[in-house]
Length: 281
Ligand code: SF4
Image (tube, rainbow, N blue to C red; front, side, top):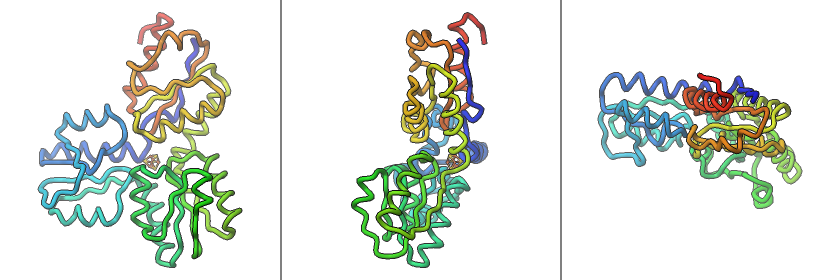
């Protein structure tokens, strides 16, 4: 079996930065927590837990030690509430996400309405909404566009991990209904390159494996892209999820992974495929 491993598989810059920041802070041995899961990957969250990093689901009234803000960012009101707890706050929001927050903040001061193209319940989108409220709507599909009611000039931004093709389709549709919007394609370069490479690999393989956390939206989106390319796709969180009997029948298999998937998990998958051929790792 031939295996093509995507060059872009694994941690993106923002995830790497958030994990490195947290692991370094954990070395200080002070109480340390992240506000919400730092990233959407169970193996990495387990590793952080082993280093003593806990996860806060709610903002406490008072806190000592360190609180790290996750890579997806949070609404500004929550940042203020965290600061008021007395804890030492470290903001690990990805710079690409901060860029989207800055665009929204700039246009909000000029009374623009904000449309965010993204997944309504995703942490990044909830954070972005906090910068735009109350003049904001989230668009996930064409039905949402029909319901839009815009009374002022508006901007469109994207959740950083959206699908490029879908972003273009939805923005074209929004402009049909409401001409003269300002469109900012804020899909990050890491997402762009990863999606482009999956489409490229799908042209060459008989099946595709996408590795990543079940809660990772960008992983699920890569799986969706492979499916749209009409390639059989297996989205797996770890080696344990691999159906080797089914995969065995393909001659050429591609592997990609979400932005929060650690290299060790990807390596295990590559190894499992090599073992099918009797090769050792
Ligand atoms: S996917 Fe892009 S925006 Fe999201 S954390 Fe990674 S680099 Fe940042």
